[in-house]
Length: 243
Image 1 (tube, helix red, strand yellow):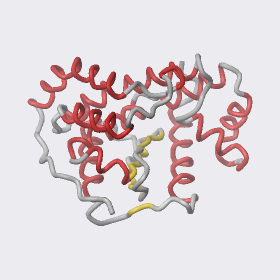
Image 2 (tube, rainbow, N blue to C red; image 1 turned 90 degrees about the vertical axis):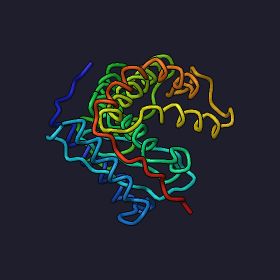
Image 3 (tube, rainbow, N blue to C red; image 1 turned 120 degrees about the vertical axis):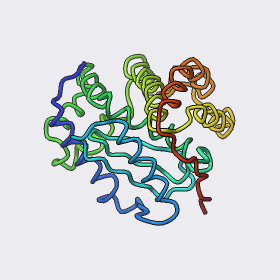
């Protein structure tokens, strides 16, 4: 279900990205240095493989060592948290996670989420979408509609479907960009180890279980490996340590 134009979604993505990485003074963006360099290298390689020239790709590194997270907004606006560095370990692992986020943008998942939220009668979100981020009281609702939240039984299973789609096609994107897709198995094994079993029940989770994701990736691996072998392979540099 797609209710909103690509032009409108690109505008919302720009506004939300500004709100979340510039306007919010609690967020610390690293603009240069050894931690930022790999993010830009991997990001631009993936953007080239995505072949979406109308997107104004941006990749920002948020200095938050205790936060293992990344997200994407419409139009190719990507944020990556330093807390993911110990989990992804190298540029191939980073490419797996960033490929996943980029596919959320390419597959227009935010548009589907917003459409569905309005379809199930989320009035505040509908109002927020109608005025965009120009109305301060609606900012939280619309940012949530662009990527998080929802009602159990309707929104959450749909979101898990999005995550599975982004896993599969993000793996192919990383492989096409020249990154070894086998890194995906290693990343999700480390993610499972890092969670230490502290996950909500699958019914209440917007993300599939890490072990289930690993099994799915093994099924995708033959196609991903073929794409990787046909690619111009990228050097797999280890990521610097986060202090």
